[in-house]
Image (tube, rainbow over all chains, first blue to last red):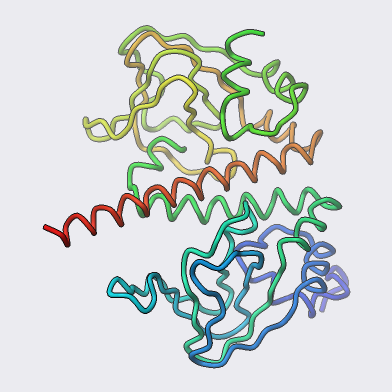
Length: 157
Length: 150
């Protein structure tokens, strides 16, 4: 550790790797770390259920999950596989909304869970953190829009 | 209140931003007028700011085919506020048009001076994108249902 490093960097280092938190300063990351809860999901365990109200953001510290829509119906589709440093449940940090997919652990998975109420409290004190997270999230969402509509970047940039 | 202000006030990206902050942005904006079928930007010019359509219509073309068109109250260049990429399409006016331009530099100045309202703008940007995803997903689902019923 160099003299320039944040004194608690070891603690929040896993969050530093998450694209959503890129550019967030050390003090604020430490607050996110302290405010988060840790969750361990066993293989096959449902972490998030489609249709449920969403009020938590999940960050995968280590492990792997499947993101499934219309689970248990004839239209059941696995739309993504996420792993270490990925995040999900992010729509609820923008506005109250129900879960659009079910997320199931496919191996033992360690997660950080951040409640939206906690995030909103943090934003009130550090609006810069909200700006950084929302602009990171927008970049991520813009990529998803582009995948669904390849003409999007032609007018958004 | 002038038309530019009314249009600025109506766009989703600037929802819940106070009037005095909107005026701050408006004071720093530039207004551009175009005749019909005039080149607004070629494919190699970086947008570097937000363009809001105050009147008229504009089209985006890539490889000589129209990829999109926007009208009054629509905006473009919003992603240039958060990342530097090349658009790749040509922007032209369809009819006589007026565009309001607010540079990224001024948005950065806004962020420094008013961090809370700027956080709202970034949240609006994420919300607009999330809604776009929901709409596109709904269209995809409808298309899938239609094709499976065929």
